[in-house]
Amino acid sequence: MDIGHLREYCLSFEGVTEKTPFGKFAARFDSILVFYVCDHMFCMFDMDNFRGVTVKGDPERIAELLETRVSCSSHRNMNHKYWIELLAGGDITESEILSMVKHSYEIVRRKYSQKQ
Image 1 (tube, rainbow, N blue to C red):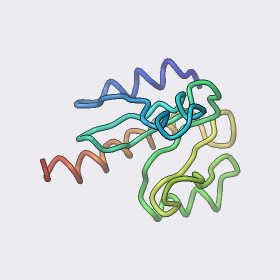
Image 2 (tube, one colour):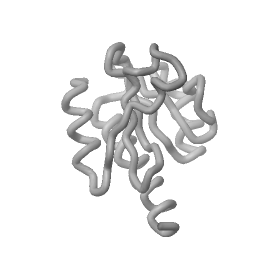
Image 3 (cartoon, rainbow, N blue to C red):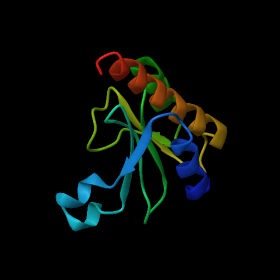
């Protein structure tokens, strides 16, 4: 999976912004690129050590992926019920990853666009 393509894909959705917000906690987190819609995160990955992407998802789908895919894992700093890390180059395809990114965007946009 190409990091530039993934970035452009995320930015192609309406109302998306990108930031590197975690550097204020520790310099080693400066390379975490986070994508937002309605001022809420929906996707993130490490630009310096790109292994995959972390996205928000439906709890049922996350549970299914964690049980059936080796290249899917819980993200250590996010709520394990709603966030999943999808490792590129494993048993989850690039098209499945992109589909999960889009679904993550839609979940967050649907939830927070009504509140704004």
